[in-house]
Amino acid sequence: MATITSLGVGSGLDLSGLLNQLNAAERQKLKPIVAQKTQEQAKISAFGRLQSALTKFQDAVTKFNDPKLYQGLKSSVLGEGVKATAGAQASAGRYEVTVNHTARAGSVASVGVADPQQSLVGAGGDTLTLSFQGKDDVTIDLAEGSTLSAIRDAINADPDAGVTASIVNDGSANGYRLVLNSKETGAAQSVTGMEFGSAALSEDTATRVAGRDAELSINNITISSSSNRVEGAIQGVTLELDAAAVGKTSTVVVERDNEALKEAVTGFVSAYNEMKSSIGRMTAVTGDAATAGELVGDRAVRTIESRLSRDLGALVQGGELTMMSQLGISLRPNGRLELDEAKLDETIASNPKALADFFAGDSKEGGMAGRLNGTLSQILGDDGLVKSSIKSSETRVSNLDDRFERMERSIDQTIERYRKQFGQLDGLIAQMNATSSYLTQQLDMLSMQMQPRKK
Image (cartoon, rainbow, N blue to C red; front, side, top):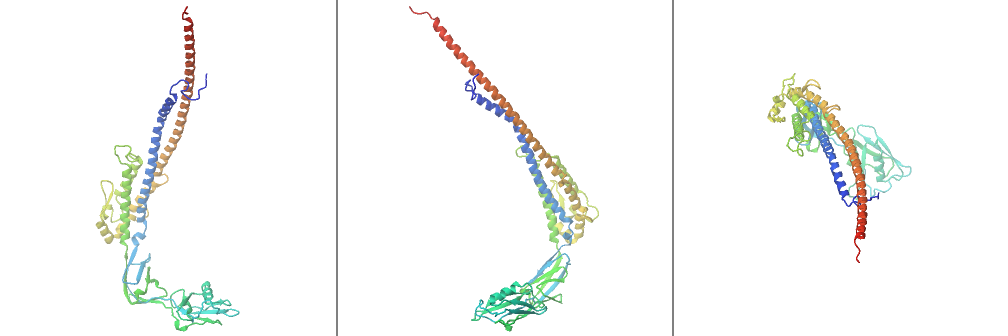
């Protein structure tokens, strides 16, 4: 049988086109697998978004188990030049703060020289002795040939110097001066003088500025501080003073931070409603598979909604408040929460302890927050509904991939079998056509031989 290199050449039939049609028809079997895989991948993505929404809600719930939320204080200042920050040890109160003067660092300066690069230290080098008001003198070695700039650098390189050195030009002919400023404010750390052994430089005592402590009164109690950052004068409160406060009285108010508690409740309601909106989109029934939610009819989602609704609606025992509605939160028929801010403000202002008892309870597991957190931990845990659903869909995707590969191999084998059969058919028809042509020629010749000859 003759070898056919291209289907249809031998027979004249469009066998290649027919083979392509058969291939397309066979590959239709893959479409349901692809559709199922797409659906499972959409579920995985949807559960990922649900996990994110639930985690955000859990974060909002967890805030209620932090004691600092109910004990938090905030500070405010009526007046200029004073800032106040309330810490964990602060107590609510009102304080009149009068600043007599702020703390400052001491400074000394040398006489002027014409050129900061001229040599001031002779052969063998020299020493510079710095004196302070409240601590021992500091001695700094100066190298032979040191200039004003080199002396500055030697002082700044000494970690024990207690001062920072700079060069100031006063604009006169001999205007370059070495200026030393105490690193810290306050009288005790104040530099009070500089003395050179034999260098051609000395202190200009007329420029001395004595360091001093800040002086203020709090409710007529006189306070001194080496720094303008005053800590401990009011327990748990840090005051920061600047020049604008001098000679003025400011009122520092430390009070309960009701805003933080309100923000926590508002965040709780908002996070829950966002989670419900996410679930609503994922379970939306539109009558069209292309636009319907990815998790329509999913049992895990229904279970999650049911457990959270049960926790929100159940009574909280052991406190003055037992239901969310008593503090201004209501569960609407659509499953979302609604907040009455006026009622919440009234509860926070009049009975913050009852609010704490409702959300936090007497233990980490108690109260509304503890109950919800326990449920959410189970839902979001490694063996919880969300991760189990994701793992289940991932397993189905993997199985569908294997099934797709097997089906593809089966289709390829079927098409290859068709190809061989078509090749055989093409060859057979070609042979039959050749035989037919040969017989036709023979019959034609025989017919011509049988015709009577003309005389």
